[in-house]
Length: 98
Image (cartoon, rainbow, N blue to C red):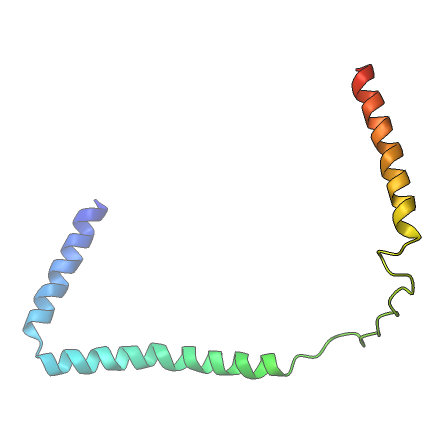
């Protein structure tokens, strides 16, 4: 049913297009294009202008200073190795007991 309906619409449209002069078709196409393009371009320009005026709701606080002790310090690495070693022993003992 839908296919027959669409076919009849397109056949009627094709017959009406054949009867109209080319200049009138071009003018009609340009008018409909402008009627669609002008509101869309206006909305786009308004959105661009509104996007430039966006301000944050809260005042941005400054980030705290970075830590004084570096991540890869000579004091921290041995402690990390000890923790990894002890965790590895625990994992091995779980695997052997299961």
